Image (cartoon, rainbow, N blue to C red):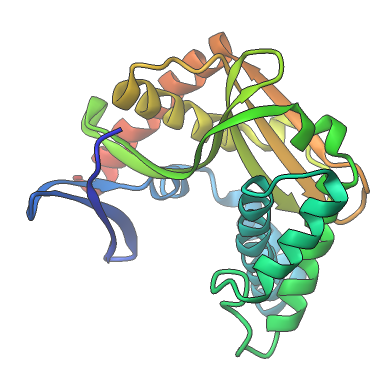
Length: 253
């Protein structure tokens, strides 16, 4: 893929990606999560906040977001290592000690908690490697910026795109949660991968064969894996474009 300078910018509470080439801004695009977050039904979330209280809702949300950020980084670092599983884990621990992203919350009161929780969630994937890490043959993209100007344009950072051991190219998204998820609760996760599917295809000419959503939760030792086919991705990409249109109607962007 071409090399661009990418900068995240925030305007009026919305996140955009500013794309620069040869010192010239060629696009300023709303993020995938900004589009989805501003076009979803928030009634369920508001009821939950009212039930648990604003302070507790804030604590839970910050824990999930921050441990998820570190968990993503641990997975990314792990995939950069080689050797058998135990050797790779030793290398990962050494890398994580000095990694700025793993230690970005170290000065905060809850920093040690976020780091410990991230490791706990990482281990849920590590100890079930045969169903997760071991099925990845070649990592094609990791924490990679994707963008497109189709249907008004959007941008985002995909967790992972890999060739799997069965030869299929898949988009992989990592999530963490308090409890196991049901498919009907996570439609926006599927729509998110649909957005990445279009952007990756547009940028590379490669049409991913499918996607997987890997979700570690607090209750179970074995993470969940939700699988999407290429046909599913085509369906959810159309749903994302519908939400992109809604976003433009709401925000004029």
